Amino acid sequence: MNLVLLGIGLAIGIAVTAVGLVVMFRNKKLYEGVIVALAGIAVVGGVMMIDAQLNYNKNNPSDGTSAPVGIESPTVNEDPSGTVTPPAEETPLPATAEPTEVPTPTEEPTATPTPTPEPGRYIEVHKSDWSLVKPDNWNGSTVYLTFDDGPSVVTGEILDALKKHNVKATFFVIGNEISANDEKYIKRAIEEGHTVGIHAYTHEYSVIYTSVDDYLTDFNRIDQLLKDKFNYKALVFRFPGGSSNETSKRYCKGIMTELTQLMPERGYSYFDWNVSPEDAMGTLEPDVIAERVLKGLSKNRTENVVLMHDFDQMSPSAQALDKIITNALADGFAFDRLTPETTPVRHTVAN
Ligand SMILES: [Zn+2]
Image (cartoon, rainbow, N blue to C red; front, side, top):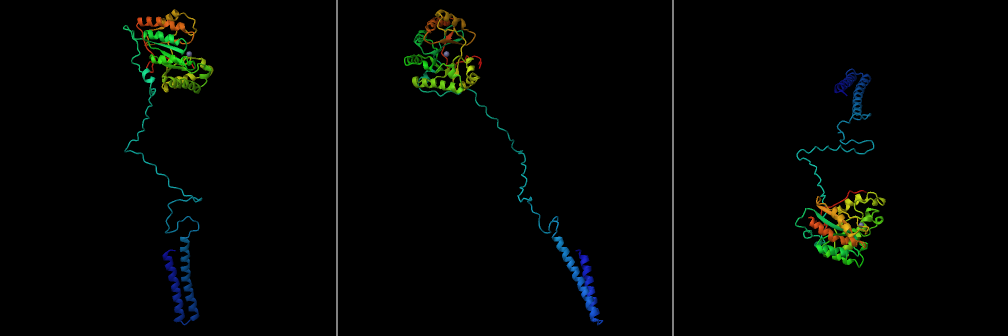
């Protein structure tokens, strides 16, 4: 209540009480004096009661909208369920002092991994600085004679012809063709400095080209056999049918596309061919085979990879070698074996 109103109310009450006392004592009118004095006291009391009530209402609002005087508002808002709403997270200021450079991811090296050399023949055979046979009139091109599908009863004949000219060649061998009797040919090929490459353990397309896993299982089997029996680590290979074969489509679509990417990543270099006398039937005369090879050689390319065969009917191919080597050397071609360092000759993949 307003202090002025309170003061006026109390003054009136006290004045009435005073008038009552005067009436009671000075005018000797006891009865009237008591009534007036009581009336004044009642006014004083009434004013004080009204003031007290007003003060009470002010401090205890019934509608809850006014904050009680003297009590600070809580700083954390509570929702009706009682859970505390955490203050909003501060938005971090952008760092201005240090530029937040995003590190550029380092490019993975795309070069094929270098296989760890293994002790023994690997070290000897895969050195590539001694096997090149180069004529004085070298035309800048090299012939790589390759023999698929051996060993066989003809392998010894092939090795003899190569030895006569001290020329090194490459044998892409088949694991299940390496009989106990034929092991000596593999040993001899390695000892005489030729490259032994992998063709397959089994040449069956329906076994090796059914899936990438099936191919790898077969490949690993011949790879391991060469290590175990001959202490030899093969690093070059030729796909049965070549990387361009379409027969594999019958068994697994796209398998050659996958394998031609996967195998070099695993450290094996594959070679197809760019000269072929088509000797696989075993019916051609040695001279015909020789002429076809010599005609197929080109000094305009640095690598001439010749596909020949090494199985039991291939004696004509072995007999053709003397003429092939003699004439090609005379024409200025060099001879060498394939190594992982040789620039690959590869077909266009067709599956
Ligand atoms: Zn073959």
